[in-house]
Amino acid sequence: MSTRNRLEERYRRVLRLLPAAYRRVWEEDMVAVFLATMRTDDPEDAEYQADYGRPPWPEVASVAWLAVRLRIGTAGAPAPRSVAWGAALRLAALCVLFSHAALALDQAGFQAWLSGRLPLLPAPPAEWTQGLATGPWTVALNAAGILWLPAFATLVAGHWRAARVLAAVALVVPAASAVASTGIAIAGGPQPFLAMLWAGVVLDVLLVVALAAFEADPAPRRRSWLLALPVAAAAAGAGMFAAPVADAAVLFDWPGLSCAAVVAGAAVHALRGPGRDPDWTHALAVLAGTALALRLVTLVDYATRPGWATRDAVLLGLAESAAVLAVLLPLRRSTRRRLHALS
Amino acid sequence: MVANRCHDILRADILGRMGATALTEPAFFVLTALAGGPRHGYAIVGEVAALSKDRVKLKVGTLYGVLDRLVGDGLAEPDRDEVHEGRLRRYYRLTDAGRHTLAEEAARQASNARIANAQLRAWRARTHGGPA
Image (cartoon, rainbow over all chains, first blue to last red; front, top):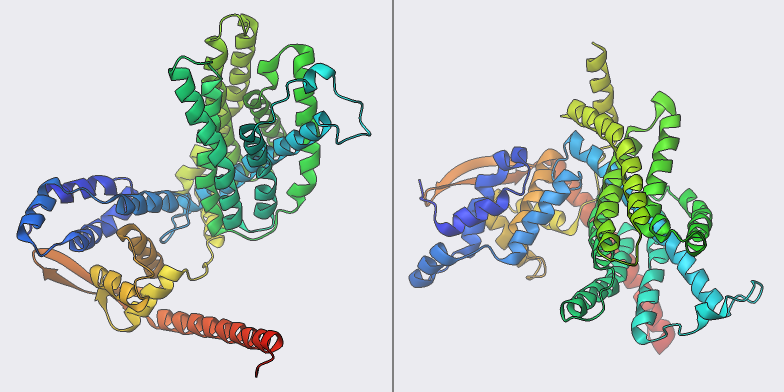
């Protein structure tokens, strides 16, 4: 029986990312293969490696990715619970990408209107077009935002890998913007909405990861979602236009809109009665949890900005959170019951 | 009783959606490596690198994701265990279903290659005026 060295212990710690049932079957095999791949003929190197060596990042990444894929039913011999998670994540990812595409459509329309490319519409107020940022950074941010449209279109056409590439590219500019804004804020420059910026980046990273769930079911049978896109874009656009008029930006910012959409979705789902799709119940639970986290995190931006947001705006944000929590609890209960039945 | 029935229906619904998926490139090379005879995990990593001329270098996480799927789908199975330097080495072998799947995939890829080569020959003949 061989004794464990520090390298083996470190690798076993990485393997704890994997589900326990999977580890029971494969852990010893994986450790043996990993140690064999790290073996070296030089005894001095081997001794150093045993004491101070760490699993290389590509090996850690392959285990982490396997852990994700096992839990969403796209790797190994999937357990029924993982398949259920995969189906729910596919729906949740589709909904998030749908909302990104709707907002991208609004953004494209808004930019075209401000720059006078929609002559049939009344001209925008002069103060909206004055000082309009046109620098390369703004152009890059706008272009990256538009990428959500083709990403959504390719996903509903069944090309999930292409959709994931487009989503990852769309994510690069906002992530760079969040890093740059944080650096400027730390250096004492203007304080942008940092929580909002980072929450968006984290959400999009999770979306890119969740798109991997489509590997198990890439069938192109979601084209009807394309028809719903202009309707959603019109609704979101109306909300954003109402914001300055109603002086309640917190209600109509994107986390607020996400809360409203999730509550509306859960209400429609509840009206379907006992025949409702359990995958949708599960997906709505995921979306409600995400919307609640987004709302609470982004309220920090409003609460820490004296003189900008009123106490009423923060209370409104808390009311949105309470509404999402009210739909999240029953959705979570149903989902737990279902997952328990599958285990 | 009712709860058990619900459980059965849910399981059947989920299991019904667990169809077989296409053979990925790592899975194709792992099956190809096992076609040469039973191998343990480390030997599979080396054999796949050699067969693909170092183009496919399997990480351990990737290899065991593939092996678990192949064993679950009945395309590969454990062959024997051996102790090597104090550690257990598990060997895997191809099943009849695995051999059949690999043959089908190889035929599909060969057919695709024939089609692509025919198109390229036709393109060369059109653009350079040479023999097709």
